Image (cartoon, rainbow over all chains, first blue to last red):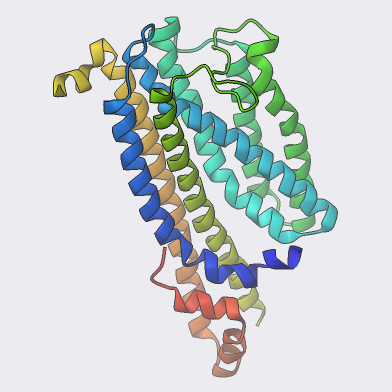
Length: 235
Length: 75
């Protein structure tokens, strides 16, 4: 199965895909922005400030999803010695980092009118900040270490430690008393959010997912060319 | 209506700054990654150009190199 992930086989697809993903992203983002800024209703308690949710929540979901994916790929890649899995992980990390920053900054902006403060050292916010540190450590490891085996080992260790933080982020609002509200959207039970707000949220999530796919493809292609550059040096 | 969208009952500053920050971050990341991509591709083409014909044809026999050379205008 792993042979289908060989760079030589997928480069012909990944090199052509970004332009189509970019077009789709712009279309979905335009619809999402129109829905979330104009057509979605204001909240009876938070008024228009609730609109920040449409960028804050998808960013938080995606950064958690990307870190979990990076961990899975790093561990499987390390066990089965699949270099390409590390390449995919490395290419996913920049968008994961940027979504983490977006979640923290927009959360801080949302906190001011809602809680009366830009920042609080509560469980959810602090654990998200810790995740940001893991992203930074992960990307720094790729910059610092030249040797492949060393970088594969260190990035795998970073992600294994980092993944412990992911369930803490998810359940922090249930385990501790925090300023942050509990989850309004549940996969297993009924969501407490009205569909007039759920639809724009889902559209924005789709747009953000497309953006992370776009960045992933561009970064992955860059990494493949970098490898081929080294290959040409040896010719 | 436009005033309402802009000011949002006094929350406009917060909402617009959150959305602006998000879009600015997207644009910044896109530009950084694109610059990296263009730089690597230029480096690749320059290196490929310095190869002698025999080595160049050997390199071109690899499908991925053929793809890189044929997709120079893509993102």
